[in-house]
Every structure is written in C-alpha cells, then in structure tokens.
Image 1 (cartoon, rainbow, N blue to C red):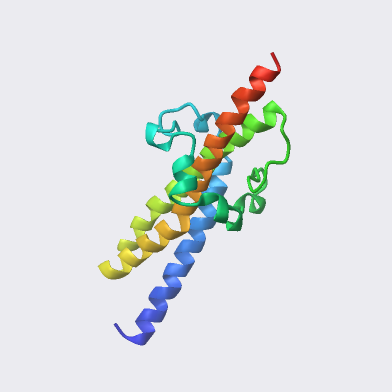
Image 2: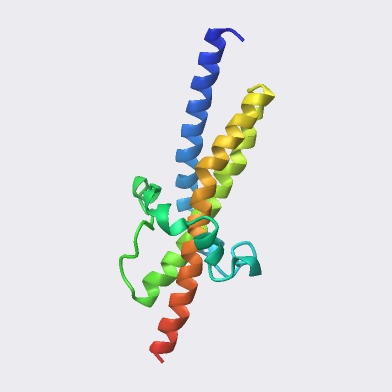
Length: 162
C-alpha cells in the first residue's frame, strides 16, 4: 500500500467508526423500552456473574467505571447512567431497563466491527475488531455490573414498601 492509500484507509475507518458510534445509539434510543426488559434471556445474568462480584474482583470495575463517557447526553431522550440520581422505585426500574438498552447498543457496535473487513485488508480488519472490543467491552461490563447492583437494590426497596 502506498502512503496515500494508507491515509485514505485510515480516514475511511475513522469516518466509519464515527457513523457507527453515533448512528447505532441514536437508533437504539428510539426503540421501544419493551425490547429491553431485564428479565429476558439475553439480559438475565448467568450463574457465573453472581451478584457482580466477578466484575469487582477480576476487572476491578469500581475503580475505572466512572472514567467512561456517558453518551446518553448526546441524544434527545437518552437516559444518563453515569450516576444514580434518585432512589424512587420507578427511576430504579427505568435505570435497570436502560442498562439493558446500553448493553445492547455496545454489543451492536462491537458486532459492526465485522463490517471493516469489507474494505480493509484482513490485518486491518482485525485491528478494527480489536478497537471495537477495547472500546465496547468495558461499557458492556459496566452495564452488566450496574444492572446486577440494581437487582439487589430494587427487591430490597420493594420489601421495605410493603
């Protein structure tokens, strides 16, 4: 490849990631909330996740999760998940649901990294998959960790209001 071809390829990849990172979250914020129910099989935690301890012990998630950006502020109707703002049951349920939406967005963006094999040589396609993984896996981990924490809070609050 010539230097000019490499520059064009890098520019196309950057533009493609920009489109993917902006369009998929925008699309997902317009999808019905019913599509992101925490009890559905895809969002239900497997036994190995337990109460989220694996994310605390193995990934030390509580040390770095606040460093991640919250893209919800970019979109009208986006639900900010950077911090717990209220403790009423309706808000907590919505927060839990939005962790499912956020997780689904990041899985979709990660899956889109396969598109880069269309116009890149194989080695560059794999670099794009590595970038997609590095950019989205931490966000997926945080969404799952936060949902597991909310799962512990919500039942407790339900018992207290009875």
